[in-house]
Image (cartoon, rainbow, N blue to C red; front, side):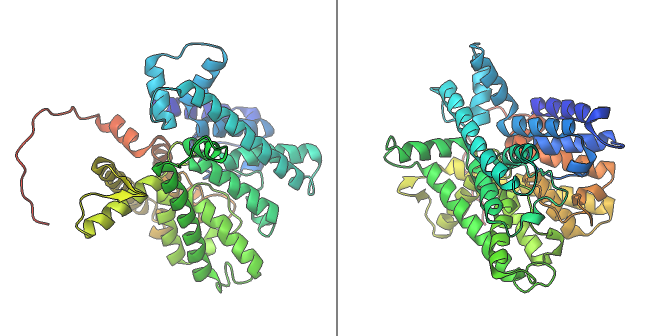
Amino acid sequence: MFSFIALIFLGALLLSLPFAHNGELRFMDALFTSTSAVCVTGLIVKDTPVDFTSFGHLIILLLIQIGGLGYMTAVSFLAVMRRQKIGHRDRLILQESLNYPGMDGLVRFLKIVFSTIFTIEVIGMIVLTLRFWVDMPLNQAAWFGVFHAVSAFNNAGFSLFSDNLMGYRGDFVINVTIPVLIILGGLGYLVLLELYHYHRGRVLRLSTHTKLVLIMSAILIVLGMAILLSMEWNNPKSFGPMSTYEKILAAWFASVNYRTAGFNTIDFSTLTDSNLFFGTFFMMTGGSPGGTAGGIKTTAVALALIGVWYTLRGDTHAHIFRRSLSPYQINKAYAFIFIASIYVVVSTIILSEVERLPFLRILFETTSAFGTVGVSTGNGGVLSYSALFSDWGKLNIIILMLMGRVGVFAFTIVIVGKAAESRIKYAEGKVVI
């Protein structure tokens, strides 16, 4: 966690340099921007294309890439490339950072992760560059293609357009390429690698983890689309004036970004309160473990739902896909959801009392920050709702973004410490529920 904090402060200092920004830039706003980039969130309190120079854009891009990979992952890869030996302690941290199941083959997996990231991002860059080339000179289109491909795969949501991607709401290429990059980045490296091996015939059966990730991701995207279309279809402020084709594309794009990234082709402030409330559930869920997304994670939500189902049935042996599930993992999922909910609710209450702004808008913003999502109801212009907050309010959002990126358990353990394992076992007590 402290490596993330160090990277955030370094990014803020670089963005504060006179040739990195245009006009005045307060350090709190530089710190907020750096945190949003490192934690691959996308919430902005400064207009990225206007308030930052080309050098500033490059710094933001590097912060997004390093933040998406994770500091330890990036440093370990550089060590491997220089043929330096990685110590046992660093291997343990790297294993936790990548959500890798064991120590065997960790360095090889790290190399595969980087080659996979490079391949996917390059393909995204080429497709986006060709599309932007229609609207701008080739050199500018290439830079826009690189920036948006990296931002999309790392689930960051930063854009070099002041209106984000609202100008491309009906564009098929943009509305397919960006969400596909977001989904691939949010699935997790383990899932991507397993799918590749399964396609090549090296793996005969997908793991329970991969199946859960794929099914939950598909369900959440489809469910998000259905809720958006059903509630906004005739809303004159949002989907109402659009054609059927644009409504479907807008719902698809928004549903994908609800979960992990901060791009938008619609103005979220025009959505109904019901849709904004439902959106908080999708943003809290976030992406999947071992990827570039934040939030509670799809697998934690899936395990909690499975645990609830079997509890209601009175069955103590939960299973899925003909595989038993550990009671400890299910309890851990419950803990994830409970702790995350406490953080978000407490932050929302504090902000609503301090900032004196509408509760639902603040809840939407805090959930977006914790899930490292980045979508926002906006400040009435091109900035996020956080731009209306005081410095203390912005600091609250910064902490939530850091917490969502580092992980609920990791953040909590750093704050309260890890409990020592007890060797005493007490007699079971009976409690009536």
